[in-house]
Amino acid sequence: MTPLALIESMPIIFITGGFAALLALILGLALGLFRELFKVEEDPLTGRIREALPGANCGGCGFPGCDGYAAAVAAGGDISLCTAGGKATADMLAEIMGAGVVELTALAAVCCCIGENGIAAKRGIYTGLESCRGAKIAGGTKFCLWGCIGFGDCVRVCKFDAITMGPGGLPVVDRTKCTGCKACAAECPQAVLRLVPRDQESTLTLCSNRNPLRAAIRKTCRLGCIKCGICVKTCPEQCIVIEDGIPVVDRAKCTACGACEEKCPTRVVRVLRGLPVEPAAASR
Image 1: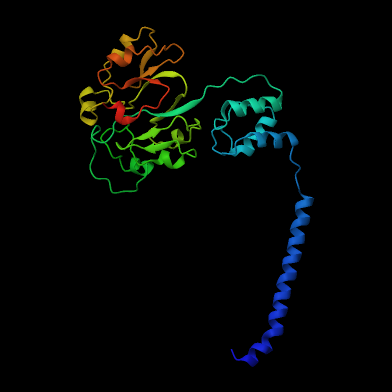
Image 2: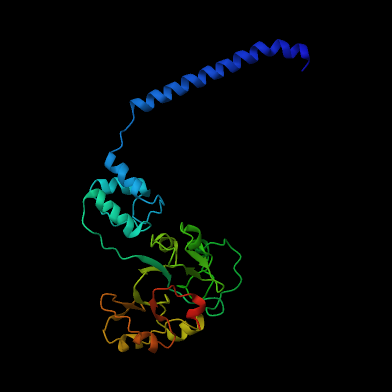
């Protein structure tokens, strides 16, 4: 563009710029007016509750974020559902709501599979989408149809950096960071991540193989539960039953005496003593 043409176009540029600025001013004033006209006043109680919550928006309470839970508590809902905040948050909510002392059991996730690399037989080289859900649609990566697939979907959804993938290809949970929000358990397509009391001794079966055929189990995983029932017979409290092929412990009766762990031939029935069971350690 020549200098003369540029000079001639200047009025148009100024007019266009002025019109755009005026339009922006009008729209800004209109939006401000509409916001004031249709503003919904927040309940002061809901605001106080929201400030007491940790703001993780993890969904562990079962509500869509901390705002949803704050509204529910203000309406008289359960004050003990914030897993991220734990007892400290529950106590603050109790004070705000004028409720009594809240007793909470802190939970943490545990991987109920010890079929790490070299223990569980693989189907072959998997070349599809590196996602547990995607691999499950394709038939999984291991011959055990119930074991951990190992692509770390649980790691990606954990908002507290509490899960890492161990060297054996299984998730390892750091109980000092885990809040028991259940996000990993909800994401796992194999349902091998389960919640147990974080600070208490508890007995758990670290296998999810439901195949009733003992020979087939041994071919797919060297440490799979072989359904021998020794744990049931050994338990002095008679608190173990076989459900869907898996030993299930009644925690209300279990004393964590360790008799079942001692007698289990594949060491899949374990007593968790306040620390996460790392797959590498469990397989030794």
